[in-house]
Length: 153
Length: 410
Image 1 (tube, each protein chain N blue to C red):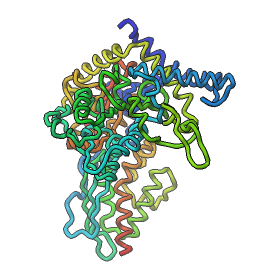
Image 2 (image 1 turned 90 degrees about the horizontal axis):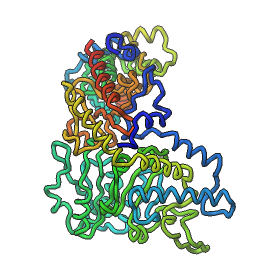
Image 3 (image 1 turned 90 degrees about the vertical axis):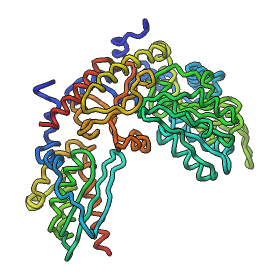
Image 4 (image 1 turned 180 degrees about the vertical axis):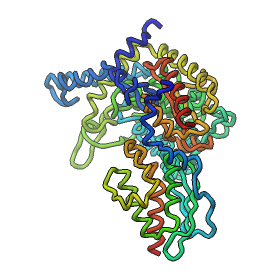
């Protein structure tokens, strides 16, 4: 199987270059001082764990820090999330979370939404590997819930 | 090993000719469930096509035949584990139900405030949680026997852990994560000396080695058919007759009663007292076929085959630079379950990549979260062997790990 790696080439949709890059060098990993939102998300079934911190000023995310460990998909996804939310309003973040959910489930996502998501579109390949969708959504779902809770205060 | 013809064995398992993602299937997830030979599958279809009827009820031919077949399967299982009497074999849904049955009946009746229950740190969740719940309910203490850094049971302080207040020791015969084989007979001696009983979670041992309940002096022993070539949905609780006889029923319903009045009921004899309702007749009969298959091979041959494979796999996997193996390094102290961790590749990424190469392994916490965490990891990959696995399956695994390393370092 060496050389051709016929089996593993099929994984290229899952492990796109952007995903591997974010996995190896996650962005926005510095701790946020006086975070307004501070949560741990984890998937006990695979042991993935992330610590998500946000500072929210005037209803926008001014600072973000995500650290943790997990598989390549969950780590890259968390890093992509961190990149996206910075500077976004809570409403924009929630719209993006919703678009990512649809992207991973193979549902319609508009051109405008894809523009907002940018590199995150690379997660689309996860939909061919349904058991890994949870890995990709772990930090997104956690942040979405935490943001709703924060706004409700 | 005259009966152990690996090519003939492999030919009995139709699923082994399946392609997975275009590759030959290499099935290394046997600790989760085994594959089924055509003899077991045929027992299921034969039953439904030829014999199907309810048991212990009718006087018609089919009911008599299905009752005979159902009870014959029980006898086969009893003989397989050397139970003195077939009535000591209770059909359940699986190992978990067998464990819960003992916890909810024998232990419910016999464990009181201030007593203790002793388990090991290497138990499956299904042999932890029922005892946690019972200990909390009874104000009893749940004690753990530890493991040393090699993953062997630490019995240095067994005299103080098992004491006069110990009512039950519930221990796995073979760890589903570490592969460690535990000294059950010794634990049985210890707890019997203080008047308690021992329950053995034999889900990982009965499929792979000759298990003799009398030699172990096990009071209760639990296992599932689906890990030993049999169908899913059926398991076994073995219990010593006198213990079972004194236990209250677990569930109420048809077949488990002797006489019912509008006011009260009395319980049927063993084993029926614990088999309320129409039982899983077809799967019990197919379990008998699985036992026949294994008995034909000879459990000593099965064990020897897996020991050879485990020794080879340990050597191959340990030779990989970036891979660490959990549990005993000495293959003689473990069964054919090898959990391992790659330094840089997460088990789930490895699992997906191996699946692309047709190799099925388990990834995750293996239903033993506290144990896996005690190795400072949250998840591990696990390869586990059975009668149809070969050295070339091990080679495929090692090659698959190497290919995956190559892929992720591109």
